[in-house]
Length: 423
Image 1 (cartoon, rainbow, N blue to C red):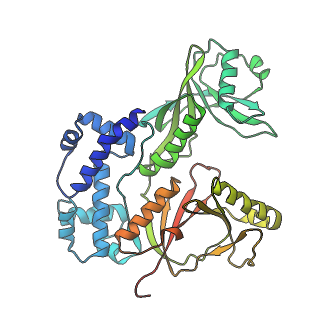
Image 2: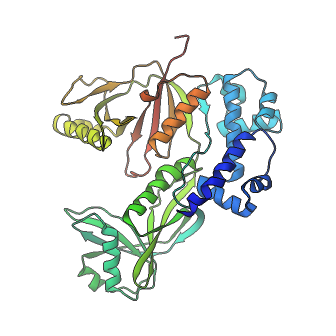
Image 3: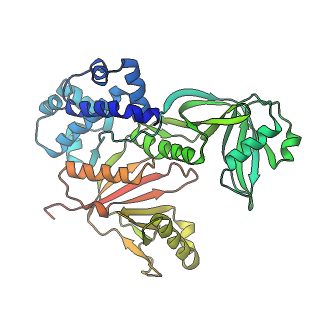
């Protein structure tokens, strides 16, 4: 069992304690007593698992609760401040203004919603956030006919040719060339025999300057399935629940070598504090239209996506040149995938591929710069609607992903149709 999972029980107890006492004046000393740990360990574990400092997390939860009451009730701001753990009317007023650029009355009467849900992450491994420097490196490219396990093949091939290498080794996926897959190695030492490397399927590339950044790191055993799960956890769970987002700086895998063998990997993910939290707004019908396909059972998402792409590639290739937004909806063991098209495009149905449009008058729109886990965002949107007295159908929620060169961090928009009793 991982260290992070061992911590999970007492961290879960802390989150529960915070929720039950969110309106009271408690400090980190009391929390450390609740968890039976030192304050130093509390700080580290809380930050490592949630991606938030204790102070930041408690503040955002209080603000979220206060804003829900401002939006949905006629309770005075003074009473809301007292009920939600703020010291005064003025303290709450300033918090709203600082977070949203709106006064409490402007927020109450507007279409913007702030929602910071309770943490419900499932820790897979420990994550450390620190300022780190990636040294200047020489990049060499390794090409192979097989993608599976190309990382280990590349590093082991290099170590066989340089058994006494003492520098640091970083790596990440490169661009495919013809039928050959690529893995990039970044070597901090200049003591390298390039003639030998070229004879072993390597090509040399340019120097990479050193850079410093705030980096989330996590150490994982050298096992393909565990490495993949660790990256998924970092990108789609930890980041989603944290106060951070990834940057334009590249990710790296650093190889920890002992006795000329790969012992472990240290994952490096450059991050920055989010410019704004995940936000929810009430919008009119966005008038979106998608070509979609539905599939059920195992690999439903992959099958539905492939059906759409096959149809578009053959019959509507112009759409691929103009659209960069992807549709996704999941319900139990079924999945609907699609690609955005023009609302004026003719209706068609071709071998289980059809068209869907937004038809309701109003939608809740959740926007985030962190891709995250689809079901987590659905839970967040559904919980928000429920907490604010908006009956919605969970199965009607869908996501629209904006695609770009940074496939790990596309923009995500979640839409949820809503109806009001006056309509």
